[in-house]
Image (cartoon, one colour):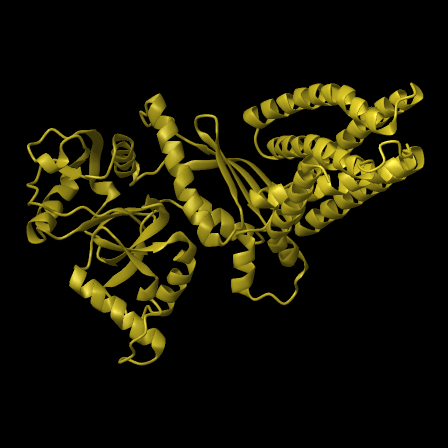
Length: 511
């Protein structure tokens, strides 16, 4: 067998194995009926998800109301991005699989929550007013003791030596942290152990951040007493560090000014807790926890430094502090709810449409092109297998327009085969050997197929770049499908012809 055929065979087997691995979580998630919650959550991380229009849920368009607040244009965008980050954290707590949250224009955002059933709860969680608080951290020694007490509590034995809680913790500078993949498990364990944590403290987490190639969330034990709130903040801004400490040269700082209502209390807190850490908590998330270096007298601004924080991060912190007491109000400008029943009907109708179209195409190919039609059908099946495998590999969300993109992909695949087969027929009529007819037919048709597919892909890329939601889902599905179409037409379908004609180049073609 020629080396090229061996190469195609190896690539085909390898792609089938990889595709099977990528699709396995999706198939198991959609077919298994005896999964426990942990297994289901693990599979959902790797599976192809169904969109809002297929499983039901909520679609919201929210607008940040910045009128009359003195925002600069760039601050409108930053405030909206900050609101998106806050809403994403809230949606995560709702347990929604693969939510779609993105900015639309300067001050609007789209929120899609597939599978959400409790509309009132979702609206309450998304629309509630954020709260900015300044609270002291528990000292490190007490923090480590509380972690040990939680381990003992979870073991059911105060003398236990296991680490069911602290075993998840990893060092992150001077703090403890948990990897993103273990966050929900650790959060559940913390909830189970509330009785162990002192009544005047609670366990809170930081935002997601990258550290040594891992996505983590820091873990803090924060005192419940609120020292000051966002209502006590007068202003905040970010600028490059201009002091003499060499440790902070080249970094940025956030300057915070307090209203009269908070100046005295802040002076007391900073004076009594020098070298302790003061957490800046927004919406229950510890955004940062700087060390109190000295007492801040009434009327003097506070400087928040950060060796690892770049300008954009300190500017975002300044915006958070400045607008934390009165976060940008969000109003719903569009709301659409899709019932699970309608979603199931959409899935059924879409699948039926694809199956009917596929059956009609298969029947046409086999009747009109006989044996060669079977090659085209095999290529078509492999094409669909590859398309779903790639979508699953990217953890894409399949929507109703995405199903339309798949249907269009089937049509384009058939169009490519028709072009190739008609060219091969022309060469056979001209008296060429089957082997030569196949080579020439593919060569002539390939240029036309490339032109047709590339122009369609360009149009789909434009759709994907300048649209969102369903239109973007259609475009992305179409792009992937067309790329796989071109690969299967040349490497898979032609490989079958090459294998058929390998030993007998004059073998009869049923076409």
